[in-house]
Image 1 (tube, rainbow, N blue to C red):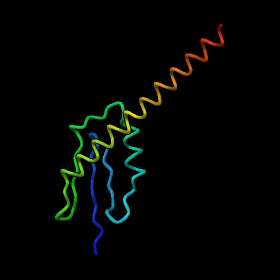
Image 2 (cartoon, one colour):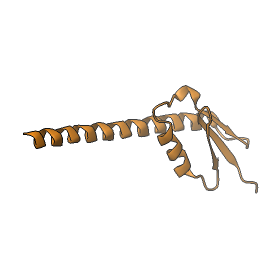
Image 3 (cartoon, rainbow, N blue to C red):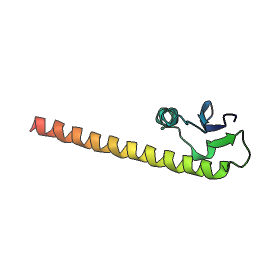
Length: 93
């Protein structure tokens, strides 16, 4: 049985290849983190080398997951920034 590959283009020049039998989700997450400031769902493309794979549905899942992950990172950063400001204000008082 040949290895089936799913290529996910997250942004121009940022492509992650996932093997269907053992997908490297870590590479996908790492790339999302790298491009989080420039992520545009319109640039996401999914291509596979096997018939029957629903590229459109997988693309929708990738876009939704990437958006959720990026939003969660922003909320964490906002909470961190707020806590840091409160610490600085407390230290000056």
